[in-house]
Image (cartoon, rainbow, N blue to C red; front, side, top):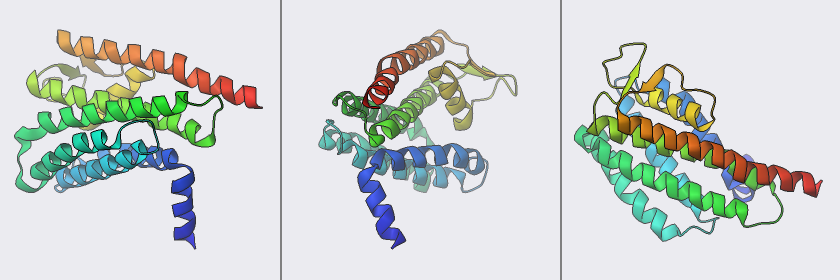
Length: 220
C-alpha cells in the first residue's frame, strides 16, 4: 500500500521527488567524500540523480532524447571513474553533467512559465530548478579547477584543491545571493563564472519565482 502511495506521489509531484533527492545529496556528500568508498558512492548517487532528472524532463517541454544523449555519456564516464579509477576523466564528466543540469533547469523553467496558474508541482519545480542550477555551476567550478588549478582558495588549507562540498557551498551561496563564504575565486575566469552565477540567481528569483508567487496569490 505504501509503495502504491509513493508511486502515486511521484506521478502527481515528480518535481518534489527530484528536489528531495537533491537535498538528500547535500547531506550525503560530506559524509561520503572522506571515506574509502566515497568516490564509488558519489558516482552512484550522481548516476541516480541523472536518471531521476531525465525522467523529470519528460514532464516538461524539454526534449527527452536530448537529455538522454547528454546523460548517457556522463553516466559512462562516472562508471569508468568509479570502477577503474580513471580520475583524469573528471573534467569531462563534470562538463557533461553541467550541460545536462543546465538543460534540465531550462526545461523546468519552460514548464513553469507555460501555465497561467501555479500548480503544487510547479512550486516544487521552483525549488528543484534552483538546486539544478546550483549543481550545474558547481560542476563548472570542478571543470575550471581541473583545467586551472588554484582557481579557488579558502581560509582552511588555501593551496589545496577545493572539495565537491566546498564548491557546492560556494555555488549555493552565490546563486542565493547570500554571500560568498570562506571559498573565494582567485583567478580571472573563476571570478567571471561566479559573477555569471550571481547574475543567474538574481534573474531566476526576479523573473521565475516572483511570477509563480504572483500566480499563487492571484489564484487565492
